[in-house]
Image (cartoon, rainbow, N blue to C red; front, side, top):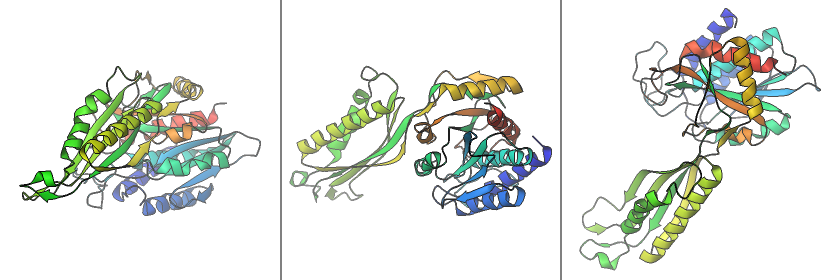
Length: 372
């Protein structure tokens, strides 16, 4: 990677870090990256509103390959003392999407200056953290006849500047499930006159261990209680309404659906037993992310060619990634570049993207752009 491009990418990363924006609110971020590319490259840019992509074209009959970076931040306050600290209280780039975007820009600089023998698309995506982004951007693949798409995620606890790869499932499927139970209020001295949702909600929680039993599923299945809210903070009133928030997670997407249906079935049964009105809502829905072996093998090949340390992952990450939406439509793979075994983990207050992996990411992407 050219030193001038590396420095431009680092400086851009620091600028993005100073101006973090939450999912679906990345207005400054998107416009700033677009302006940077217009200033430093001759790439064609297509603005799609909340997201955009840039293109390097060589001809209609050439292969179309895409690379994705996300650019949203997290609702976490910046507490570490760094020169490029977040300027916005309560918001910071604690997952490294500022670095992902900067790496893709660095790659775009290299392609724009040195060329390629195929059509290269640089996809800059919003709202990865909530699962909204990729599902909105996925039309880009068919509209541009994208034959293959790649991405990387920085990851702490892994050897610095080593690439980690896996065939098949790389990230579990997950979704947020909210169960609302409506009863009727009563005086706390006469609870029999009302309908209290507490016992039904307790019954759901008490059944989670059985509902996620390893004897029932082929792969890992988890149900995590994240929030419970029952009644009011008033000792004279028996609870009449309650909500339960759960995160459902599974190695196989079909087993996530099975778990969801089993919880709904149990909820309806308990609601009927206690005379409650139940309802369900869902959010933060992520598909399973399944790498195509052909694409993973290309990552392996480039690492060998460029002497980038490669490590085979033994199991998928439990955390979800919306890149899975793209891999349902076309070939591709996501891999991981290590920040270091002792480096602060993503989504923690001590974390800041490791600028030392920018060149590794760019060289990996360049190699993938060159391969047949």
